[in-house]
Image (tube, rainbow, N blue to C red; front, side, top):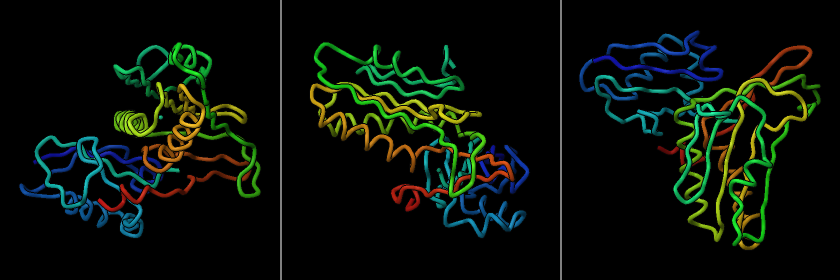
Length: 238
């Protein structure tokens, strides 16, 4: 049977592959596929504790069985169309989740989500700073597993909306090159009361940073580096 395999972030550089097709024996699982590539690229074996695998755009354990035509992604630790968005999901309840390669328009998001019943709007803008660990940053570059990332954004947002007394939530991440001072991510929450809005926005950015398959590369005057992060334990334990 043949499966499609995708690599992202530093794993793409380690293997020299962004995607490839592999023929496997019937009954193969994700762990046998991982072993196949770890045999070719020993660095993957060293990174095994921090690599997460996705099966047909869902996080999966390495015991997951494979079938003809499956799509598998090797995902390094995380550090995101239509109109201005490369991918977007509009929830019937008014929530909005998207990826874009253009500047994020927080004002437009606010107008779209705000309702007459809301008494508070909380907006978190994650912006590019000019330094990292004592080194001057020139710019950043973000890439992600786009089809999966927007679905994970939507799942996180819906879970947050169900857990907090809010009106609506929007989560938008930008991809590609970003200059100093530009927003790479926006989490916006509307709510009848401010406490729920603040709590939901904080949970949104915290979970996004550890769960959504998006990777950041920092460019300095003297080099460049993929930013090392870590997966949320709920993902790694699969």
